[in-house]
Image (cartoon, rainbow, N blue to C red; front, side):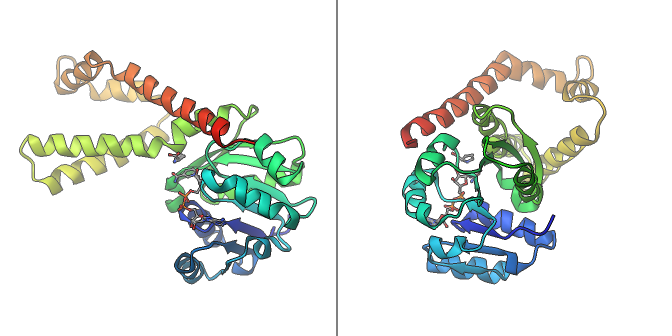
Length: 272
Ligand SMILES: NC(=O)C1=CN([C@@H]2O[C@H](COP(=O)(O)OP(=O)(O)OC[C@H]3O[C@@H](n4cnc5c(N)ncnc54)[C@H](O)[C@@H]3O)[C@@H](O)[C@H]2O)C=CC1
Ligand SMILES: O=C(O)[C@@H]1CCC=N1
């Protein structure tokens, strides 16, 4: 497959992660373009990645095979309606906006190939994971191109139903923040137990990294790995019983339900 030319509309954090991933994979700077209204942001992204970053969204999409919509959901309708006349038939639109459906995008841009996806911020380190959904207009080649784009920054997983993007948002889109919250809480608790803050933080972060690496590398599931740490009547059991007495699993389910609902609500509020 020849290298597609990619235009990013909005050159913020997620776009920068994707652009960084593509460049690290050897995609030529000439094949990537971006647009952003912020002059400072334009200069920063252009300098960091050696690509052209322009002010006009319409200019950015000229000649692109893939147009990545990477602005905040709240401005997506305005951005799309202004961009629609500049898009050509056959250009693939990839949206990374939370809570913006393919139907809304098609209403604003006209019926066209659209891939809706939900990446996450570890994309910055090319350790991301994304859920992808393609509408009926997307060709097999475009599906492959979208998958290659998201695979540049991590793992890309296809979904059969668009509705499941809300669940992906709840699990992995927002997910890094849940782990950061646990890291904050463990560091603070370690400090209260008498450890210097730096030490508590290093112990927490390296434990999170080690546990994640073990879970990914292991041929047994997380429940079994947990059991292997948990000696009968030992310290881990004391902690895990305390988590469970506080309703840990139910709380996690409630939290993810809230994120899933919020993603669906955004779609209703910001939709066509
Ligand atoms: N931050 C996250 O963890 C995740 C974010 N997303 C989605 O990615 C999208 C972008 O999020 P971030 O990169 O975090 O936001 P950001 O605020 O860093 O980037 C958005 C960029 O769009 C630019 N922009 C504003 N109006 C514009 C316009 N009219 N035309 C072109 N560009 C315009 C802004 O100047 C900014 O640089 C959002 O839709 C969000 O839902 C998806 C997955 C995870
Ligand atoms: O919090 C949000 O709405 C976005 C989507 C997933 C991560 N950040």
